[in-house]
Length: 85
Image 1 (cartoon, one colour):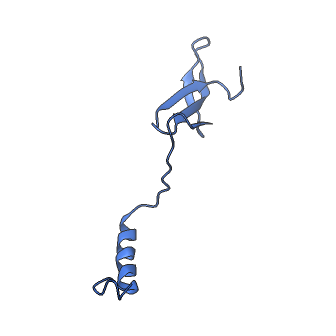
Image 2 (cartoon, rainbow, N blue to C red):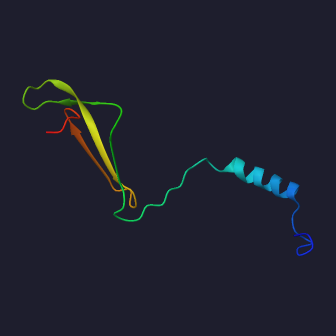
Image 3 (tube, rainbow, N blue to C red):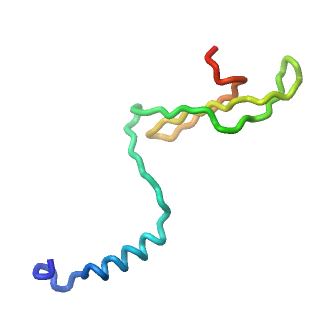
């Protein structure tokens, strides 16, 4: 490398620049998703207080969330339980 690029960086200089750059960026895990390939679904960890129309009482609802991988289009719905109808 030094023969082909006499003005190039040495390893220690590269490490110094890399350390400075790495200190500025957040740790992330980028993922690529092709359109229509993935749908992520789950229930949110916390419940939400909802007034039951039939009784007027406050009940805790489960929050179902679905997200399309490529577009991050998000759908959410409150349900009384996580059981299938």
